[in-house]
Length: 171
Image (cartoon, rainbow, N blue to C red; front, side):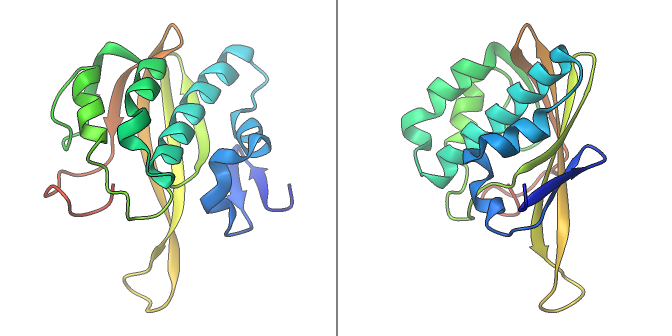
């Protein structure tokens, strides 16, 4: 674990390469999902694996080929979506929405922490972003998203993203 450590329940990434390879690192996923409570660990692992599979689809540019099987594995048919950029509720609309994710922005950021409270799992992802104030510098952009988990499936999602013009802004 020289390239990351877990500090206060949050992964601190020490090696820039891990931002691109996190989804293929079982040791990293195990460390972020770890919990003394087996039920909490199962929920953490579910949302981390979901994010990892989506990240692989984007990285490998296989969204069209595999998005349906990933969504069927992790989400319910009547998935509720609270992202203002999404076209509505239901797994079919989620699949269609994800088919339009930009594939030219690099590997999606790693999950660095998951907090579970009842049915809710708050996922924090992190990536270095260009600092708009200090030229040439970066800062840690922390991205939060929230899922409701019931019976081992994702049933509802809230996003912290503001509404944007399609095709512009972060995704």
